[in-house]
Image 1 (cartoon, protein in one colour):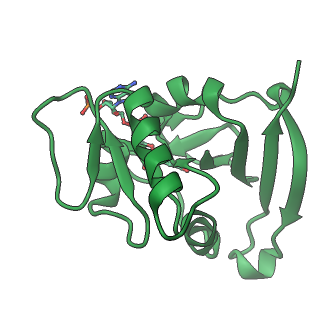
Image 2: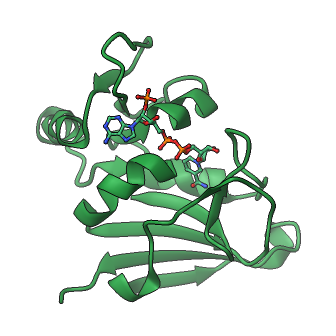
Image 3: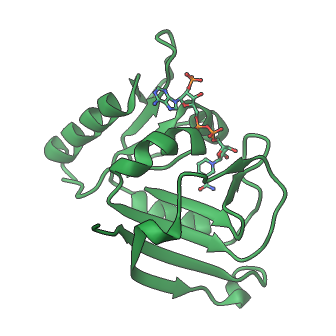
Amino acid sequence: MMMAMDKNQLIGKAGGLPWHVPGDLAYFKRVTMGKPVIMGRKTFDSIGKPLPGRTNVVVTRNSQWQAEGVLVAHDIAEAMELARNICLTSDTKAAEMMVIGGAGLNREAMPLTQRLYLTVIDHAYEGDTWLDSFQWSDWSVVSEEVQDPANTGGLSVTYWVLDKSIR
Ligand SMILES: NC(=O)c1ccc[n+]([C@@H]2O[C@H](COP(=O)([O-])OP(=O)(O)OC[C@H]3O[C@@H](n4cnc5c(N)ncnc54)[C@H](OP(=O)(O)O)[C@@H]3O)[C@@H](O)[C@H]2O)c1
């Protein structure tokens, strides 16, 4: 899974992102490129088009829903099966499938997630959607990279890579 949140675990505002953080979208692109990306239908609507260079799997309960350039799944298991087949058969041989939100889809995907690429912006924004399925105590730190605030418009941004703790 790959997500960005603020200090209160906020991830969304009015169908979009609450912030513009220079560098975060480039990081998102670098980590997800070549891998299948699984997203909720509302997140797809907010992006507005398929992410290039990645097989896009959109999850919806609406059996009529379709969009050009994406695969459609009707539950998380079907989405993961589609993405798994891409990992096994595509030229890129992607090592990971990536769940990229939003909060609704993540509630079901979080228990299945082994690795989380989590960007934390140390600021409190206004918004309406939170990553309520995440708690730090479930995760072990693989790596942590603090961005130079000179490159983020003065914001304190940390890129965490976390693995699910074994209990
Ligand atoms: N900060 C970040 O990293 C980040 C990342 C992604 C998104 N966001 C933000 O998060 C917000 C969107 O998140 P959200 O929670 O409102 O929506 P979402 O999770 O993107 O999409 C929810 C929709 O996905 C479908 N869905 C979810 N779980 C499903 C399941 N188990 N089976 C079948 N369909 C399922 C349903 O679509 P139907 O209604 O079509 O049935 C549901 O209404 C936006 O503001 C977006 O910008 C932020």
